[in-house]
Length: 410
Image 1 (cartoon, helix red, strand yellow):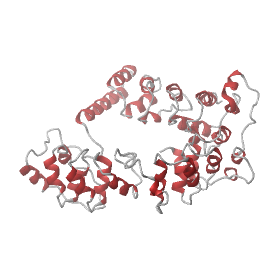
Image 2 (tube, rainbow, N blue to C red):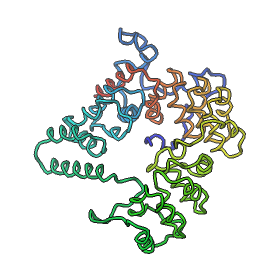
Image 3 (tube, rainbow, N blue to C red):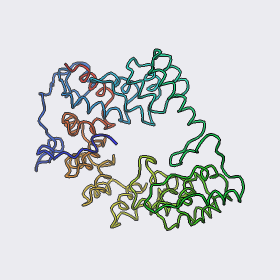
Image 4 (cartoon, helix red, strand yellow):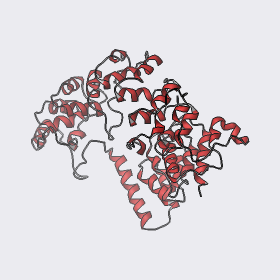
């Protein structure tokens, strides 16, 4: 989640459209400079983006917002991201935690002169053994280098042991799971039960048996809630066990099944979606589950539940007219879904960019349907600059211009 999505500043009068104004004029904000309309050869290539003249000196908060936004912009190529390492007072490298980094970014981070950049690359857990080797070779012998070596060894050990999210670690390297029904029964008897509201990790030895269908059948019928939740963390389960857990009275059992098990059924995924907004541990679930319905979602367009209603836009048969309709929905969740849809009209994108709800505004600021003139204005306001910098419609040449302006700040 970007920092901009967590802020809820009081809307300024300039964020509100004024009656009778065109789509670009609706977002006119006080600017710290007059746009320079005399274009250089480079400016001519930028088109409307030449409104960011080379003589402009953005404020520090604008620079920080641009760096944060461009770092997670899905259209930013490797050379833009690598350039961000050297923008601002401190090296910026937080975006190295992304799981969709273009090739070459981690290679550059591993040998960057700034220790902070190399440190974030190391902590990200995304370095390959070869990249780790280059990073350590580039770091002089010191207590810091020895700490990096320990980190590299820990990450390698986790990869080898296959530690999974939501599963507790084994007590020690000598611990072994039960190997027969009698041992399973004996170890199950030692698992303390829990209350429904307790935070739960899968029991290590149950997770070790996730591929044992017979063991899962025995454990799935246990009256012990922690044991059933531990079974639900299996990546795959026999159909009868899936069906049993999909109807479990404990909704966390059902939630765990949708987060961890690729066999979770579509009806369960829809049920959990109706009340679960997702977690950082399992980003996107249940909506990005391989069994989540992709067809026949238009039936939810009239659903009284907003979270179900917004799913209609995911149906391949949905159209721009539905996007426009949802852009005026009374519920902010539904308007926010429409605000991020690239089928949204430019006029509606500008309107939603000044919506009363901050989340809706942020979605519109990132929408490539937003006209360049309006997007440029948003980039010059510290309240919207970060989300606006995430907009994939920003041309790469304009990204370089933004980085150049930020770097040249006095």
